[in-house]
Image (cartoon, rainbow, N blue to C red; front, side, top):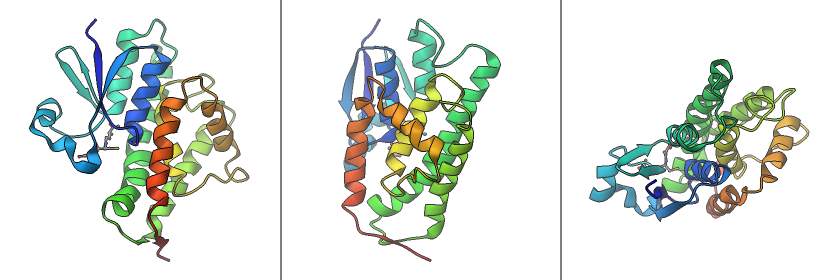
Length: 221
Ligand SMILES: N[C@@H](CCC(=O)N[C@@H](CS)C(=O)NCC(=O)O)C(=O)O
């Protein structure tokens, strides 16, 4: 087996989701820092591997795979001894897939990336209230998904949890989770923090929160 190479930076939520998956599967890999804050993802060498210039990127031998969700599903399908993180049962897998698409479109793109672009990258000091509403809408949905269940896709840990914790633990830098309103969500976060390999997310989430807290912004009414 060729040594796996993961490109990215710890502050990036989807990079952390892949790191959690690699740790859950106990796979060795080399981590190569690509700092998107200094536009390293636009280098000729990186664009040759990922023309979409996003992190994370996984290199496995001659293959280059990007998008955290595609990478995570690939890693489990190729390297896991059991299918618990990404079930082979088609109906169970469909639920995990739904949550992964939800993370990608609703949580990451519509909530986290949208506000982060404004606050961290464009230095906006007044954020439209829709950006905050997109975050609470994401919290509302996951609170519902968790009703009667310990994990995002049912009663066992799956890739859905490893993906969603990366972005939700970053969203809390903008909107803290109110445990009284989001009882299931706050318990799930605590459950995820108990994973033996949670540090793979904790370090980067703290870096991300530090960057957000270093900015001053208000919410337009
Ligand atoms: N849906 C993608 C999102 C990847 C993404 O947008 N990553 C950001 C960093 S968090 C990035 O690479 N931005 C730099 C760019 O798009 O040039 C995934 O899950 O991998």
